[in-house]
Length: 200
Image 1 (cartoon, helix red, strand yellow):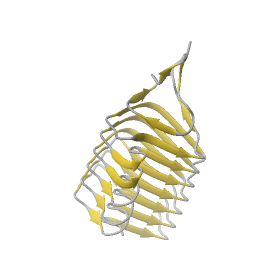
Image 2 (cartoon, rainbow, N blue to C red; image 1 turned 180 degrees about the horizontal axis):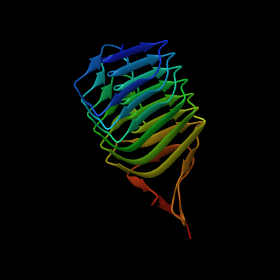
Image 3 (spheres, rainbow, N blue to C red; image 1 turned 180 degrees about the vertical axis):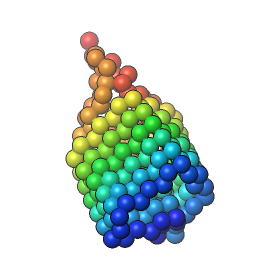
Image 4 (cartoon, helix red, strand yellow; image 1 turned 135 degrees about the horizontal axis):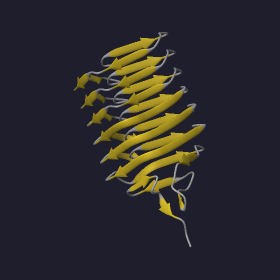
């Protein structure tokens, strides 16, 4: 576990201003694996072609840990054999992706970019998701996430259901006169705050 960092019963993990390429783990967390630890943050970095070869979390896999954040970064071509092509979380604090581009990432099962189960919250702002893939939720697969907010984001060329939620309502920051459903399967290309036009 943890192609670059293995953190167990540890403090915070931070990757700042770095280029991370072709890192992998045989099981979980192609870059960072965190269990019973503090926050994990990746900022102002380029992360390319990292993978969890047999299980989950192509970049970050976090269990019973603090917040997980990706900010001001480009993530491309990362993958997981199971779930969470970029981020896999279970029983964690807040998850956030801001000011970033995430493209061509994949998971064979759930969440081509993020799979989150029983996590505190998810926040997405200023992110372009392009050409990501998964069997269920090519960008997001969320289960029992208490609060999710999405603002200023675009979803383009992602396969199947772009977002799949279960007991995980989404608060969309849509323009006046626009709307999005709060739960379920979201398919096709769309962006926020444009969202869908309200019916007449």
